Length: 185
Image 1 (spheres, one colour):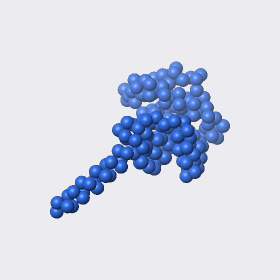
Image 2 (cartoon, rainbow, N blue to C red):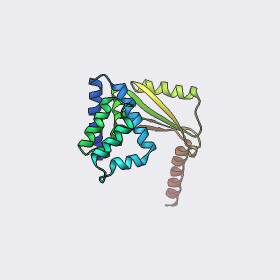
Image 3 (cartoon, rainbow, N blue to C red):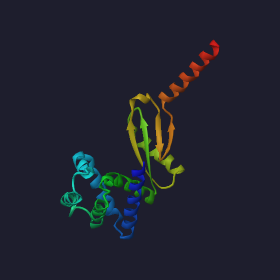
Image 4 (tube, rainbow, N blue to C red):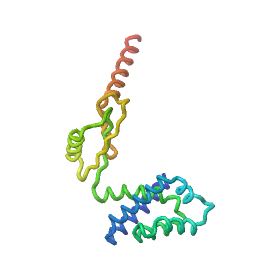
């Protein structure tokens, strides 16, 4: 939890600096490349997290991988994190950067989990409803979970609306069970 707060602070600092230097979109692309690279190569994450490997070596690795491919601001940010012995937080800081970016841009992440894939028209209707209750741009993702049987679960930010058949059956089961036990007493 404490590491997440520290990562969020570093991400916010990077976001503010990128805004100040008019390179926000470039830095966002850099963080995407960095995050995707580390996600695809857990051994690179292990190297960055290793206390045995020297900070200069870690800087050298990141420079070889990303120099010329990312903005100088992003590379300098990695260098600062390593100099402050915070390289273990780089992956989480990149993730936190996306959250900070979305907050700054007013982008709301939403997901709808359904028993089967929704049509484009259905997703559009759900997106329109979300826009009516939430200001900003909505990024809607459809996930499939066949255990829902039918209906859907909508997650918007930290709110959840569960209209799944599985939940309704669970509620019905609880009611029937409690009525059964009440009638026995």
